[in-house]
Picture 1 (spheres, rainbow, N blue to C red):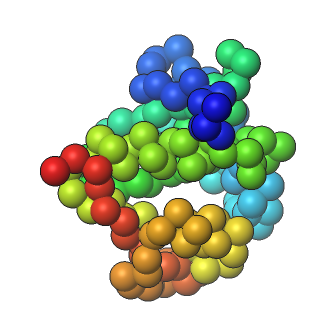
Picture 2: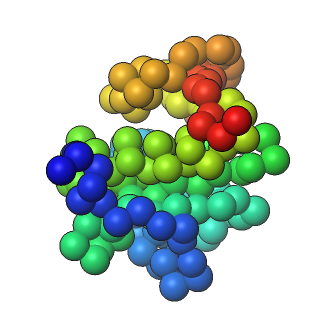
Length: 149
């Protein structure tokens, strides 16, 4: 059995949004404790995924993570896994699913202060192609090859 065989990965639907919002709130709260309260709400979650395709990872029937992609620019906007489920392969499985759907290179940004996320993406083969500054601090832009030719 491959490590990612235990994950049920599928496109998210309307009935998955409450669980995804809860994952967003829990993960943002744990990862970015200084994030203002208004940035850790269901409304902030909804705004962050508007116009994007989402995929979810389920384990034993429970949604434990999601990824959202803005396909017009092949940009991964969000990859959130419940804090107590991180490091078990769900993020890798979600990234691989999206990579196989991509019609070209994929990109994302990660905060420089989020060393765990940066190390995770680098282990998955993503490379740094830029950097910048946002109101929340400095970030790296990363890129990887998509899977559809």
